[in-house]
Picture (tube, rainbow, N blue to C red):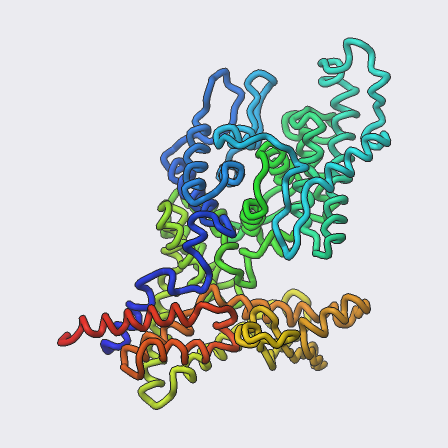
Length: 595
């Protein structure tokens, strides 16, 4: 390998910022997204976990538990990365839960709840589900919808058959109600299940009314949380509902919420294949969320992304960081939970857990190579704030792929430029290769899901679908004009103007024929629209060209960005990053003279 390739490779990785167009320095202080705060919390909590600290909640007669210390460490780590107290509390509580903590424990004196503990340690104010927003998915709603619907039903006497006006003195508020027929067999189960069902349905309706797809899992958790603000959240229930000490009111709220939202009874962790009871999961997360305070929209986005650790994340509407589409780096949170569970499975062995990371990236993403590079980038950026077992494992599981990806691009650029090709041509060829990978793997994945033989070809991908502004004409990610040819079982469909023509036509004219096939086009197009998270197709060739003295770094960068206009340069910023990398390559070449 010659010095130009060495210089280009080293320049490409010299600053983590230059691997992406995403503003990852802003993420280190929680601006816009909070996933670095969540991953930092996971680093801190996993460090304590593998030291042998007990993270179980108990009702022991003590002023503190070991988990108090763990929660504090997680909260401090999240706040170091800019998380607000309520967001930090949410991250720490959720990560502890996935690490094995129980959501609640205890009798009235000594009772502890994970969300409440985290909130108090963080110093966040108590609010309520009414103030909890959903994650943003184009638009967003809030738990107000669930609370309002439940209270309306309550006023109409629809939550339980028990009329509180009839309760005799000495019964209301005491064990004759709470630990006998009236409470355990009737009142608690009815209020828990009816409230959770009504709240969940109201959340789904709110999403739809805001013009967005409903998230079943977030609707269910907020529906359950709103119910658990009313019903005794850890009440025993009658034996018809399950075993003593096995099923409580929170479980029943989770069950009703899941059934209302259409969530499968079992969920499965990516990588480890661990099975989760979705009724218990939703009930427990509802207990956490009702007590956590007022997390922000971006805090709830990271919470939702953690739930993408489940294989069923697309089905339950969890978020975007579980694949198959690679989202912007600020979404990438699911891997923190996947790695946490893998480390627990392998008793802290990072090598074995890293193999899980590598396997998940290889098999569950449209472009495995780019997905691995992207995770490596956000993990390394997180380590600038807080190191730990989670990011160490992420890096170990993706470093090989990242290294190979950069070297391969550097070699190709060197050989092609030496053979007379322009930098623009090299970048364009790399992007066409990525486009083909996305088309082929999207067709294979969607074909396996639907049982059809599918072929996908993106014929056009440019900006300016509806606008003539120079910005949107230059960067197709903001006003995408996409034409796609789909072949389904031999039948060809031409989707001309996917975003501006086909999708509105399908929705407003109830075109079921189009609604069925739009996902086959939307998924690969979205993957390419979001390409700005990893721009090595632009920066590496620019570094090689600068090292080869094709022209000066600024001109090299301009040509490289131009070559990526139909893929990697979906959003602005690549040119500036390419200039930095190209200048560094020249500097390295000067230092290598005589070697």
